[in-house]
Image 1: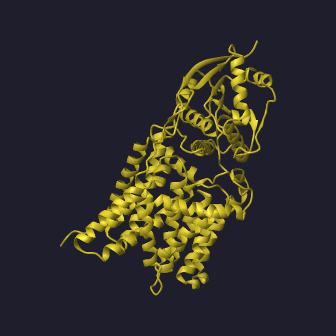
Image 2: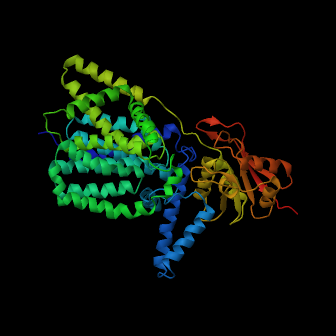
Image 3: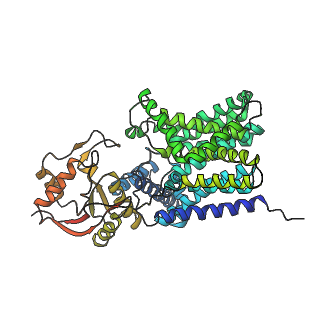
Length: 532
């Protein structure tokens, strides 16, 4: 009698293989060599994660030393001091759970570039395992395994676990939550509803996209016509978990993130542009073959006259809910917001593949599998390396020359400033050196950069500020160009440095690479000598 492999052994093997695949994609795209500039938000996610990690360490010290002093006062002092040193913290603008996960990971494994990307690979592996397990319940192990591998290989997916971004964790929690809700629809068990409540809460506390689950759940009830579950105490218990767990934070910070919105309020003009944008990006993210398979799978699973399993209704509801939510909330037009629905989309694509293959035999089945795999491979071909570098070299030189507590001013766009701050924070015992952002110290603007106004009306006033003796180092990225990136204070700094060579001595310079493109001029590290 053949020996049956235990399910947990299979899951462990799939998890390890999925981690290896995610790591291979990260390595091939240069994630472990690149600096944190793949997205304007990436350095802020790194610094915010370090802040939460170090805050937890402070809480531990506070407890060990006997809880001396007001926790609110000490906490505020620590937060203010930390932000003074590393002004790239987004807690409040973004929910806290991603940073708590980073902290739980980096406390034992250390805060380093490698540790952070191992965490992202592990989260991606967990997402692949979830897809494998739900498909394995209905299809062959081969189809489930290939689907998981395709998910981790989709360019949109792999690019965001190649960055320190919240999308992979958000997708893992949202997909897990909707699968739990699907099980609840099928089995009507209290445990499934409670799991949905917990995972939905964590998804909302990871990224605003998690709020789409508030639409996905009622849609799934409608799709399955199981409205009697509205009377279920388990369902309302799950809702209570979400309200109590995620409600206070969401309500308290509801206005903090609006500075990055494209529009201050909901509007039809945004929805009219966003809905076709996201539908198109879904097609681009999957490619022609997977879209066709998805369409077949939807027709097969959602056709009339057949009982609709909860998992398929829930998966369909998540796709619809995210498309609608992202088309209503004016947070911007970025394909990354679709990552949480790609596992659900691949569920239907797998169902479509199985339906077609089930009606073929012999060489026709093999030919169909070859065509489907070849067509899917086309969607996986787009490959972009993550090559952002140059600021880490300047950070290393500055730290080797600077004294504790020295103040540096970095002038670039938001991404460049963040790259420098993140590398300084990772390289030193925090908090130590003070980093100021030129976009904040020499100008004023909203989180998104609108409402810009320079702080100094003349070059001489800026020179007096820079040469006053308070700032020791100046990092200048003069390659910043383009509307919305190159600002008046960039030109002011360039003129002041040229006019006063005795006060600004070049210590080092470094070629800046962004997205694999070498910038026209290198960034320079200046040591500032106060005027006599």
